[in-house]
Amino acid sequence: MKTIKLNDYNQIADFINNADYHSASYLYKLPQAHEDVEDKIRQAIVDPGVFAHVDDQEQIIMLMLAFKYEEEKYKVVGPFLRTDVTPNVTEFQSLFESLAQSKPKTTNFNFSFEETEQTFLQFMKDIQSSYSFTDYHLITTQDVGEIEHAQNITNYHPAYYRSFCKLHENTFKHDVMTADEIIDSLDENNHLFVFMSEGLLKGYVYLQVYEHKKNAEIKYFSSHSDYRLMGIAFDLLTHALHFAFSTYDINKIYFKIRSKNTTLVERFNELGFNINYEYKKFKYVASHI
Image (cartoon, rainbow, N blue to C red; front, side):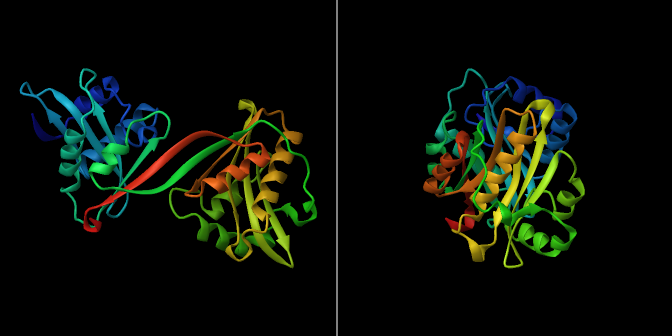
């Protein structure tokens, strides 16, 4: 067995389509649309490269690639295994080291695994990656009613532009809609509610309704750091739930939250939310070892 870099898109795509992916990090980063998949893989071929273990007949046994999202920051996708191969920690470590050593030691390599569906802990331990946080995907099917402080919550108004922009940009950094994109999207199915008190914007929630799918997403929500632990975020979420369920013909509402605090996540049970998916995130930086 030896390690090589692959440059043939069709060879890579054919292997991934037929591989065992139960140990693959960031599996959901491979989009379903064919053109998007091809674009992502071709970018990975150029930077940082697609690495594979091959047998004596030059047949791929294990394959790994990564998607760049910032300078010296990558999301590792894989490993993908030939279906007759059992996941092997040593071989995973060897393949990942080939990928990592192709970049400076300060490069971040990030991993993501679905908690209840994938095997990953020993892999992460052996390459000495560190746990970062968990992405919780929560879902509810019930309206919890109106809130006590409904008078503090109102629809977005241009007068709130600067305060909203500052809060959104300070809260969300990567791979998100900009404040202007949110504002430009507002219509009968996209709603931005703000929490106003003492003349200050202390929080907001952005709701997207997909009535044709009978669901809605709380895309973003936040409260100002100076006013945390005051129930503002929960009031905004409650208001969004009540508005969506009472205004539209929908069956469920979902959102994602990033946290290390399981107790905080469990508090969303009070609003009827349950965990639908749970993704554990890890980070490897050679210079930190």
